[in-house]
Amino acid sequence: MQSQPVHHFETSPPIHWLVLLAVFTICFATGLVADDSLVQTNAAEIAAVKQAAQKALKELFLPRAEINKKSYGFEDNDVVADAALKPPVELFILDDKRVLAYQSGQPVSSLLKPTGQWFVPVAIGGTNRAMIQVTQTATNKWTGSGWGWTPLARDWQSIKKWWPASGGFTPLFIISPPMAGYYFTVPQVQPANLTPFMSPQSAIAAKDGPPPALDDASQTIQGIRQVLVQRKKEP
Image (cartoon, rainbow, N blue to C red):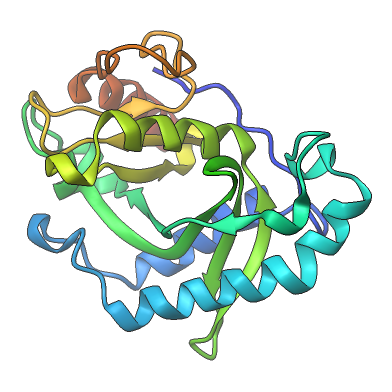
């Protein structure tokens, strides 16, 4: 199933496809992630990501948002200075080779690689407004490199509400460059699932009520696999 395109605001020349290229580059040099290590990220790395996001929020994005709130995902009555950061969300990528070899029922986490990128939700009064993208530079420093992804920020808040850490859930945030879209999986929910953000079938846009049904990973991956196979056939 293809996800709907994600709109985000940018503070520099278009970065969406540059980000995807960077993701590919990073992942070629990175091993596959073991199931039990996906949520065991180094505390020092998380602290560095938070620091980079806070610096970007204060020095780069909030001064611009004061001038044009809507363009930065804020509401007209928001006090921009009250914006606060929520815990960072690590971005993973689906490995093409593992996707092509996927077997029904296989955990989605076994298909993932880290990207070296994080998204940090920005909230007003606890409600997500946007996300700051934080990437690692060639000198191993972390920097806030982008702003936006407002629909993703709002949907991620709903996902965390439906499948909270207090209940033992660890939703994972995933990108699939062949589909130019973002997905999530909840490893603790069976059967194996992989759901596009803003998927009509999953009803992610409905913020209230019980958790929506998650998309079967086999069906979602079948759509991604078809794109990969078609690309291999192209000259």
